[in-house]
Image (cartoon, rainbow, N blue to C red; front, side):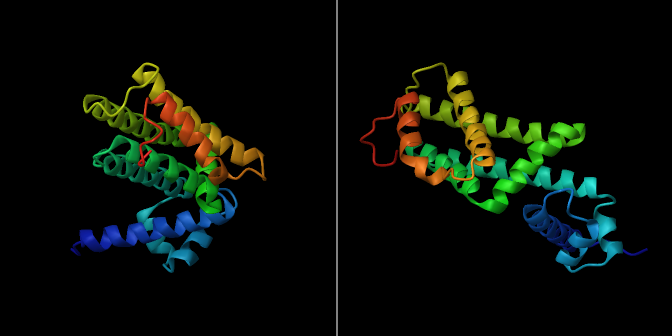
Length: 204
């Protein structure tokens, strides 16, 4: 019986996922075929379907991979010693994603697919919870260190950031002239006010 090399298996599976992400960013979920993903990954149909039996399985894996990236990102923000710097990094990260055509399309594709498919919706909501929980933990840490003095209850402050993220991507989706990065200074000012951060703080 042939044994499976777990490292090689994980590497090849991730290569297929990376290929799928590239295809989805370029053409969307429904215009991308499994054959296009196979070609992008440079693999055989047999290997592709060994890792992912259906295109839906690939889509779900991409959504779950997004969630893992979100969790990793939030952990890295929590490791920053200064809350203003972490909050600025969060804002910059969101604006960067919204400004990148491929990343933006993938995120909007996930949202649209979630409205049609309950499994994708559940996977997407799991990622959303990770983001919300990460922001809540970030704010708790900052408040305990005396680095944040939100003007509103902590749960509302976290939801404000979640709504802000949704709003940025919604605006990009409907307004072709909207430049997320051009709003950075204004958004940073509002965020500093909401979280009680001194505007003179260089990290804010």
